Length: 144
Image (tube, rainbow, N blue to C red; front, side, top):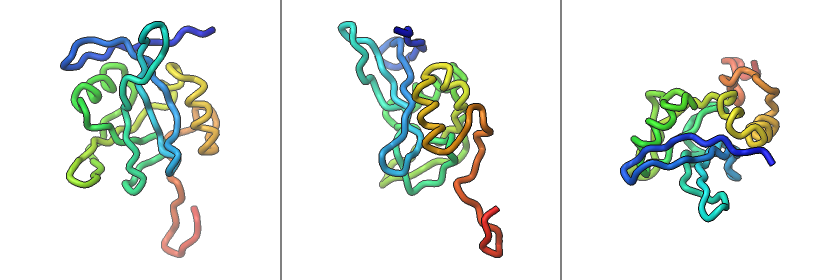
């Protein structure tokens, strides 16, 4: 069995060693990233790094960050070079969510199977450029 690669996560309640889990949300197939930790010898959910905002614009490698312990999560992303925090934000009700362009190649180092499934879901090959539009149309209504 392959050993999980852990990353240090510092937040207001201390330090945790976490494992990244990559997947897709059932609604909209957007990028999902979960954080797992070992409890009593078993891996279990620690927190969701991302939140599903299916009506907010995002590229295939982009996701919105869950706002619980937002600053700790954004610092975690930067510290481990998981992606780039973007200036755009998403909104749901009164809450606002930071948007991140994740590096799928870096995530694949941490969860190869999860990223492989996510790329296959979106018809991407390994190490394909991440900045792909879902579908763009020219002024004449033709796909590019």
